[in-house]
View 1 (cartoon, one colour):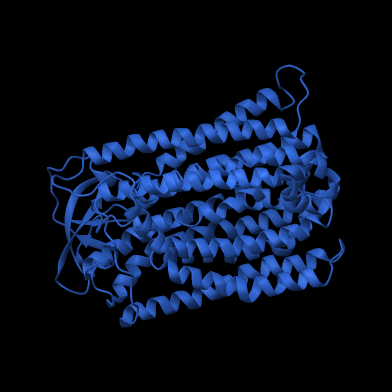
View 2: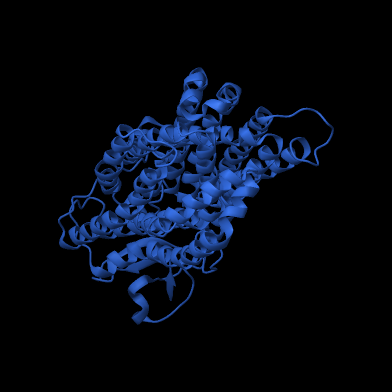
Length: 535
């Protein structure tokens, strides 16, 4: 019988390019790790050596399959994107001048991304290796990740709250700066819950449990919408005075509830996995320094990448804020639309692609021997590893191309006016959209392709990002700082920086990915050791 690890189906040996030949064990309990109902012995497409890998359930909609995981991830990302849109609308109805203040939540999240995109993003290559690592050790690494990220998140929250005045001076226009300090102090502790949320989400996706981040998203979004309706909206209960700080308290409380629900569900799911582990499996579920070091060996690449990228972005944002309230609000509305509901498919596809590329990479490393530092991959191996990302590219193009034309021609200005309550802001937003939104088609493709490097060689992922940021974004950021922009000319230069970086990144990722494949196929890549955590 032939089973695909991406989708269901059968077939003969001619379909082997993306499939494995398996001998199925009909006696294994269907509750076993990763919804795996069978254990298989596969055959390499370039040789006769067999190696054991788990074969997912044949039902396409299960969470251990690409289509099922994608559905879970779309549902997970669409809920907070929907809420971020609604929250701007409700604030605009209370006081349209304060819409720009709510963007500080986004900028706080950007600061938190520096720690969120460090160790957690290494989980796809470490925890996602379901072939070489036991489920017990993968759970132990996940526990370590969540605890460590919670500590970092708390530290980040205290730092931001302590520096609220300086943060506000940098990222809030002068017109509403005084009123925004309290909002920043409240929102600062969103870093703690955001760090826990992101760590749990990355770990559970790598464990083939995308329903855990879905639960987090559902809990916090549902509570947010209900409480905002009751307290902030035009149909709110009572006539008490509310302001932007009320919304911050509600959002913080709901994020805390979502993070707590996610941790509880994570503990429940991992306990089930551990109970049904194979007999005689070694390893420990307890957090450990060894597990932290294992994550850090790959995670420091993603940490440096995130640090460089986000520092440059926040530098540019401080310049945008200096252009005044209308310009800064328009940029915030643009991002709410572009990085909100419109970006959901791209984010969901990236999360799914990273997970399944990580699984495929782990299976290939196991096949060639995890102790082999310079293995040689066949074309079939490369296709097998890249397949989830290539599927994601095709789906992303099918969505992004028509969406770009539709929003540019008809949708942006009325949507922006609805969110901001200002015709001036809506006009600026529409101009921004028509200028650079086409560049996000390149972003959608490059993001899926970059997930191959993220889930296989984080060092290469760091390299391609540094090339883009240090040789494009940084020089233009310096130019923007030196020429002293004004409101009339600012967007010309910001469009070059932001839009240009997306196109340049696309070209760079194609070159780097070609080099990645060539070096693997010629046996020139020296791979990192697979550090097993079995005690």
